[in-house]
Amino acid sequence: MNITIWRRHNRDGCDSKNRYDPRCGCHLWAQFVWKGATGVFEGKKLTYQNKWSLETRSWSEAQGKAKDLEKRLKDFADGKVSNKGISVEDAVKEWWALREQNKLNNVKAKLMGQKLIDCKCILWDGRNARWETSQHACVEANGKARAWLKGF
Image (cartoon, rainbow, N blue to C red):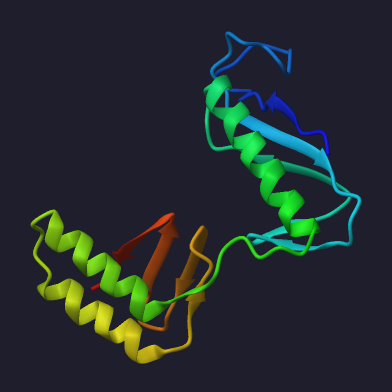
């Protein structure tokens, strides 16, 4: 699989017309052709031609992310499971431990985290995911468990 890295220019702040301009500060994207069956990979829809943000402006960081994406896509095509799901209870406990390690107050976090644990309806894959409950509590994961509890 060949992944092409290119810049998606912001029309308001960039005059460059070259998709590969190294001096431009616009966001970098990955483009690739998926010849396997259509499906969902890490929350993103796989179609024949895909254009996904690499969420960086650094060319060297984008190259590393593209290599990692290529490896994960190859594993996905081969049927290998790259990440096992983590339960909400485990994620919330990891989040509490992270907060305690950083000497943050856990009173409200424990209350909101317990509400999420009691819901018992959410799993995430350990990469990037987001869920909302009826109480507008959001949980996000990016590698390590992180949580933001909003609206309370």
